[in-house]
Length: 67
Image (tube, rainbow, N blue to C red; front, side, top):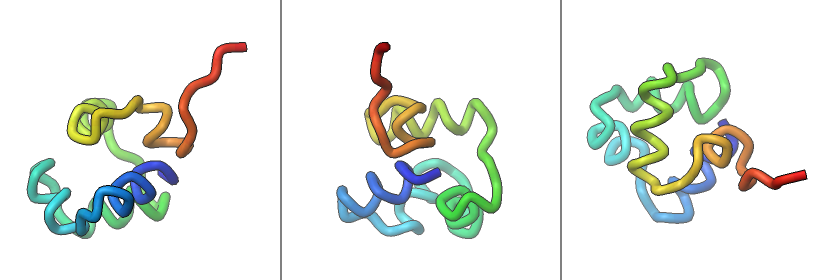
């Protein structure tokens, strides 16, 4: 999830802070950021709300573009 790492770093947040706020382990967050695991849909929604970005952005690092 390219966008997850990007937005976390842009906001100067460390993995432990984000993981604690989202009620997941730091290790899980690391796996999501590296693409080793994929979060559940409900966690994607929570992440989207936490960072105030689209789920599409969290996954791709880009905002959704209409064609």
